[in-house]
Length: 96
Image 1: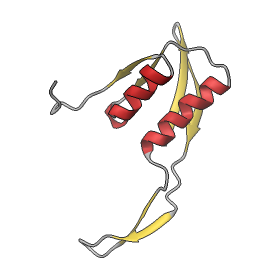
Image 2: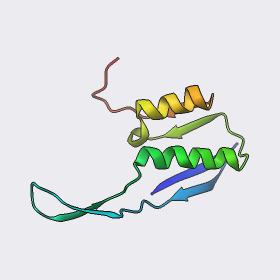
Image 3: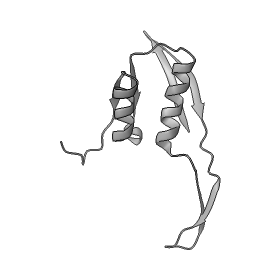
Image 4: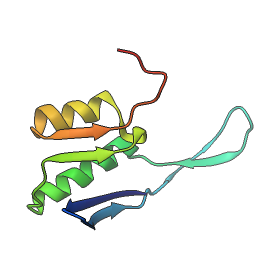
């Protein structure tokens, strides 16, 4: 599940969430067990929630997310395309 919220001063209010629908069944070749996955990536869900906030005219200056959403594609999207700032966690094994 991915959640978006907006914070003003000391108040935070959820403004959107998306439950991940795992609609594709597949068999894992390693253990031969049936598993499920989503046809939409977690990063696409993340960007869709940001777009929904913008379409609903939610005013915000930056996006905060944990390292689960720290992809180069998300960073470029937020900064270059939306002209917004971001604070994203980064795994400790990343170097500049």
